[in-house]
Image (cartoon, helix red, strand yellow):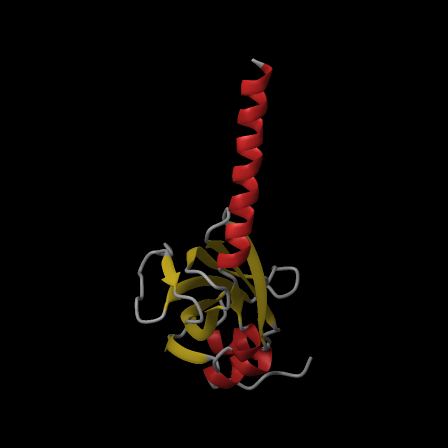
Length: 180
């Protein structure tokens, strides 16, 4: 009985070692988000009270295996305590595949390839202000890009941050910032 248990335990350990060596040789996927290389902010649409802006981020698989981006969200960090004249909402979608809902459809990234993700930011004037007035007092908007990556190993949640500056937002919206 002890010999059978020893053989089973030995086989499990051997299998674990072989698997570890296999993963070391074959490698893992590794996604790098190039936030510093994001595209220039663009104006998608504008009304008296709202504007939608977008920028693209490159998600590059620098690993040796196929990677899957299972989920990706854009979470603007503009609390009312910092500036309450604008309500900000964010969304992420794969370039060329716009979605009307906030669902992010999983996408594969081949090894050494790049997937472009469009980050859309909706700015809505608050406190009965028109958009131009609200944007003239705008502040910088940090946006956390939170994504789930999946490969040979268990899924991993990662985060990177981009900052949409007040100057950049004002320029693309055609507004002049007020000195305060």
